[in-house]
Length: 131
Image (cartoon, rainbow, N blue to C red; front, side):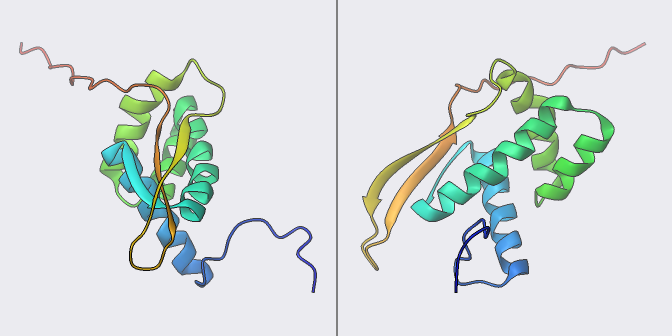
């Protein structure tokens, strides 16, 4: 059996479980801005989140809906499109970094931290003027 042309890791899960795993990891990354997971999951998450960030940077209605579909919660999608993506406009790619950290005690798995490359600032919401 050959592996030619088969992209992505399976993680010993079925397709819908893999999709849910990546959605959950991406949502956690957007909300927390830095998460720790296993190295293979982090590497696969890079491929997934880079595409979502590119869509969020365009910011039109169709891409906004694609970002909402790609994340678990609408709150995370709004944060990615309205707060994070405008701060990442200086880059065309390479928005996140993966750093190896430690070996997990239970099974010896290589752990890694995935985080945004640029320092993100908290953007206050603009207050509406009262008439």
